[in-house]
Length: 133
Image (cartoon, rainbow, N blue to C red; front, side, top):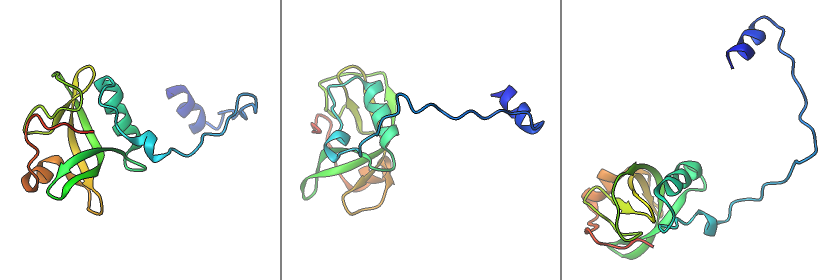
């Protein structure tokens, strides 16, 4: 990268057209593909959340005051913890994965605005042991 930037600065950077061989069309991501599979390893879940944020957004079913609802997961961190996949492990919205766990840091209710998990939890009780789908 340093050599490329140096060459660009000195006007000696050579651009090459990519070959057409191996080019494929990437289909639009379907909503069902964006659903979080908590049985997957924490690194994979975390990367899915990061990769799909802010659009189309990874999502999970989460209990809310009005029953159960789809919640967009916009941010997360990996945590060294474990449990039954999809289970809320603590009051900070740490969720167990197939291997390890992730802490949800930012989310968005359906029809709502994006917010930090701490703000969400001030208005919504998600007891430890709750299972997310």
